[in-house]
Amino acid sequence: MIELRDYQQQIITDIRTQFRSMDRTVLVQLATGGGKTVTSAYMVKTASEKGLRCAWIVHRREIILQASRTFWSMEIPHSLVMGGSIQDPEAMVQVGSVQTMARRLDKLPKFDLIIFDECHHIASAQYQQIFDANPRAKVIGLTATPWRLDGRGLSQWFDSMVQGPTVANLMERGALCDYKLYAPSAEDVSKVGNQAGDFKRDDLAKVMDKPSVVGNVIGNFKKYAAGKRAIVFAVSIEHSKHVAEQFNEAGISAAHVDGSTHPSTRDAIVADFTSGAIQVLSNADLFGEGFDVPAVEAVILLRPTQSLSLHLQQIGRGLRPKADGGGAIILDHAGNAMRHGLPDDEREWNLEDRPKKKKGAKSEVSTKQCP
Image (cartoon, rainbow, N blue to C red; front, side, top):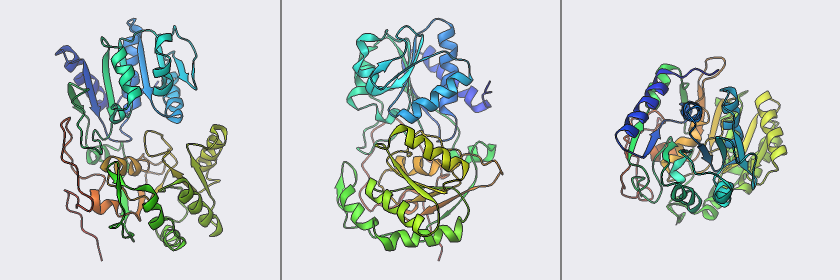
């Protein structure tokens, strides 16, 4: 059995307090690596043992299977809802994808408790369908970063917010590891256009997907993170493939994965990365949220972004405690630390709307680049 940390127990107490105060929907903000899945699983276990029907919902297969393993480790019987099918419609606990649940609402019972992981996506239509179909359910939203790029707050869906410890506090507790962040280079993206609040992907790829850029990355990887297992966040699928190719040509074992990679192939590649058979794992839009790869010792940022949420989610992949007690290495070749600050900077989160950040605007937190 997994034991809750003191701050996780406090989060559960705070959620129950909000429910007792007549709030029906509560958002939980807890940093990447802080243990949102474990914390929410305890609430599901308690609720289901009282005869309440529960749903734990997210948008990616990898996160579902990861959550399922956590649920079984805590002896929580559950049904999987994914790939268009429902394992057991009568099960008290359903763990699954927002896509399948939204399409199979007529096959599922009304829920008493719904937990939306990565709930900053809740404005999308399928989340909204499930939300609207269960008007009596208590709802908990989980996220490390309760901000949307369009500036809309989450107060439309959540009555209140419970916050966990800061990243700095989690590092002090040993729940997250320390880090060293190097920003040895950053390409000029001042002429890259905007789309949906972030840099336009095609234009950004033209700037970042160059052999000279990746060659610089490889040189700095050898200098600052030699021998470590690193995850790369690339702009696009083609960019990620090119990064993996250049690492392999440089004699550093690397592989590319993305959402279209066959699940069995993807699982095998992640297993090779975990074992050390592959040293560099390059991805596009796959590991930025929720998916836990404990073997990550270094993070390479090759995707400039105007999203603070995406920036912190990506860096968070490397901040899990290491078996040897060491820290993470972050190589920022995207200029994101200068835009958004450092991972353990103090930040104030709330549910309200906020002004959209202009392209090129500096971080609210002062960050200085060393000579």
